[in-house]
Image (tube, rainbow, N blue to C red; front, top):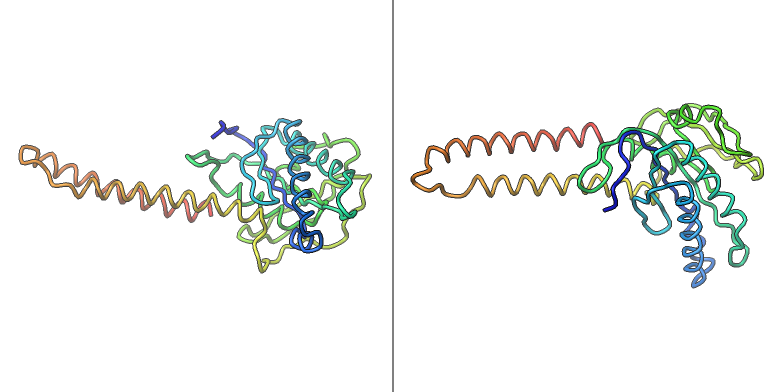
Length: 256
């Protein structure tokens, strides 16, 4: 895995709105849309120093060391997507969500509620929108990308997150979507939600492996000359298992 930026980072989740409908309407031509979408996203994000964390289908997960770089990358990508000539003139509209935090970095990538928060913000939006958390908006201050304006959308109740004040980075050269945010729990998960959920599953798998190894080590019969040391080892193993169970419980409660 590529070394991930640590400390304070800004996460950016994206996915195509109405991808299933586009697939039904375009059939075999949809593959070309996905390829063009991925090329545009990767070109625009890498131009602003993004690290690609994950991709699933038509969704992306990036991280940036600066909130300003993330905002400029999102604006750049939205304009490139709007200017592209898509098959049958079908507009491809991508929603984007940004959040800044100080996540932990584990064996399988970023850990913590900041990943989930960024994914939920993305899922609340509509195609063409760039949504920001209050933290990201504060870091941007007045240093907005050219031709962009900040709009306060107020407190929103996001799934599993409770209240989050959300802002929209609106582009002056593109029409705004008048629809309210999708803050009610959806019947199906978005691609961004699925990426965030996969990180939770990786944590669970890692903890389960550690528990299994601890139990195997505790179950081996001791050699006669080492009987006393074995008793101490069993006690240490028991304490270790208890600690691992506690860690797993805390990770589930605090981070997910």
